[in-house]
Length: 267
Ligand code: DGY
Image (cartoon, rainbow, N blue to C red; front, top):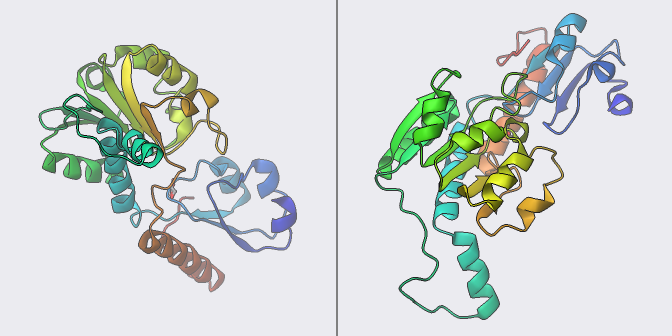
């Protein structure tokens, strides 16, 4: 990163680029970072602020795509879609049996949404149309109640010092036996080893994940489980959304270089 940024006045970065204090202070000409993501936990914001580096992100345009992917994970996990797909491919057959690949219905169940911001609210809208009762928390206040009463829990908070391992062993133990966990936010919000324990013991029925604690690595224990659906951080991966994100990042860099205020300033 230091070499790549050495001659830059501004840079468009990805969520996988670590913009640490050391990287940010390595080039005194660097005045702007346009992170091509809504999340910016890859950037030391405090250091950027102190160094006078403007940071922008790409909010808004990925809300619906990420909510779609969350619903896709909820449906794929509860209806065992990946297991079914694997079976058809491997056997070359489709046999109807009364008790084969039974899953869990959404109708009448309760979905707890941790983080009722833009994406959480968009997931809630979708879940309502499936007959799901939705409860949400913005802060930690009613988190315990949500954990204890929800059949499905979906995470939509940013990764911060406060939310790192928000879903740890203690939180997982509070979840209903047979509940499902979904995470399309940031991996380190969940203690992945504790999640594996909860899945292996049967306390949780399944999980749908788009993000992982140590990306790009995925916990090998998860790879062995048939009751989890694992996506490769594709929440915003539609042609429309990724184009919109790129356009926002590029537009804000151009505005900044022209001396105008960027539209999506984080610092
Ligand atoms: C984001 O923007 O933060 C997503 O995780 C990737 O699109």
